[in-house]
Image 1 (cartoon, rainbow, N blue to C red):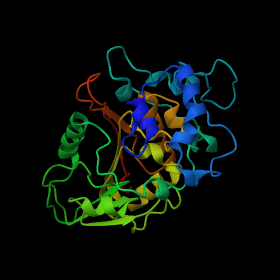
Image 2 (cartoon, rainbow, N blue to C red):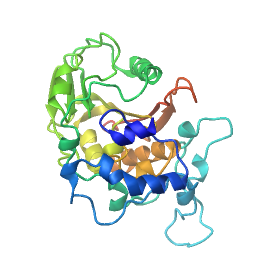
Image 3 (cartoon, one colour):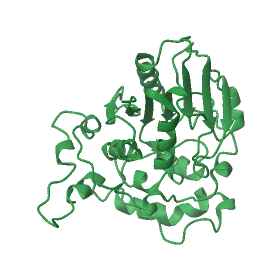
Image 4 (cartoon, one colour):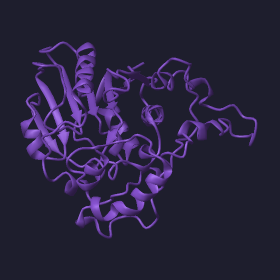
Length: 316
């Protein structure tokens, strides 16, 4: 599985299993020739990419040693202390409960670097008519959508599927007057039967969403939030175009094209990912407190599936 993904990253995303550090060192040293598209030569950043997978220190544990206040350098209360999971509960579902967010966005520019910094339009130039999560995970996501989406054929309802492709995993037969898809490959978007319209745009180059304020009731993003290198810009735009009370649903698993995923994602685990996505909602502003949900259908036997969602705050 890993070998196939390394030889051709265009076939299927790599599952992040937190391999041992020595494996990652070997991957970091040997992947550039076999994974990086030729056109990316000279486009990678000069500094080596940080790879922390497998060394046992999670993002939350690192943040747990930070002081949430501004004054004390020791003895301060961790802003993740109240979010640490209870025994027997899903860490993903616990991690956004009663979070004490730090005053400022805690990530640096380098956290959003990627191993392959070549244009995403090049990487996604060839259509991939495959699914990036397995069938049980897809079914779990579709079932979740069926519970939270507005009823089909409801007048005035509009949805936006960000980072869309040839399938959106919406419930079978789901229709609204307007369902817009935004992605990177025209051929994939043309094949998506649920879309009423689509457009291709690289959000990592231009995060401005070409829609009026207060346009959409629901925004979805399936297993692609980990590729956004300007997430706060995108989440601010999402808030702008959502109607008051509108719902934004970010879903993800433990699979990705890791050469294109941001550094902070590939260096952390599933619960950390939920915290990261939750931070995007929080620091973008204008959202209700984000909530994380573990909808994994068969833990340990099929792909996990996680949701982080929030709603645009209603006008006062």
